[in-house]
Amino acid sequence: MAEFNAGGTVTAIDSLFRQLSTKSHCSLCTRAAAMYSLLVTAKMNNIDPQVWLGGVLARIATYPAHRLDELLPWNWAPRPSAMAA
Image (cartoon, rainbow, N blue to C red; front, side, top):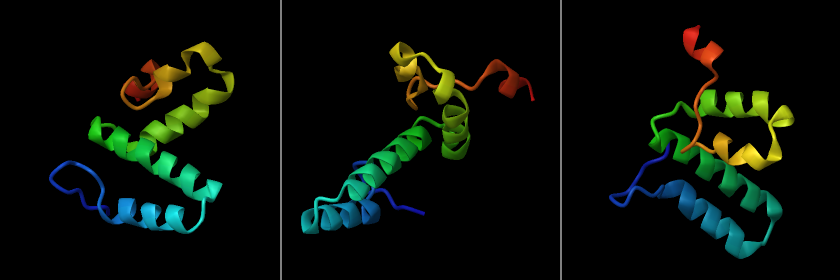
C-alpha cells in the first residue's frame, strides 16, 4: 500500500514515476501515473477504487461523450441498481 506524506501526496509511487519519467519520456509511464492518480483520487473521495473503476468500465462505452466528466471520481455515483444490491 502507498504511504502518504503530510501534504497528502503519495511518496514512494510518486518518486518512482518521477524517476522513470526523467530517464525516458515513455507514454506507458504517463498513462500509469494518470491511472494511479485517478485511483488515489477515488480513495481520497471515500470511494472504493475497485468499485469506481468497475463502474466506469461498465458505463464508458455507451456513456455520452459530453457527460464523461460525471465519471470522474469527484463526480461519480454508483448506479441506483448497484446501491440497492
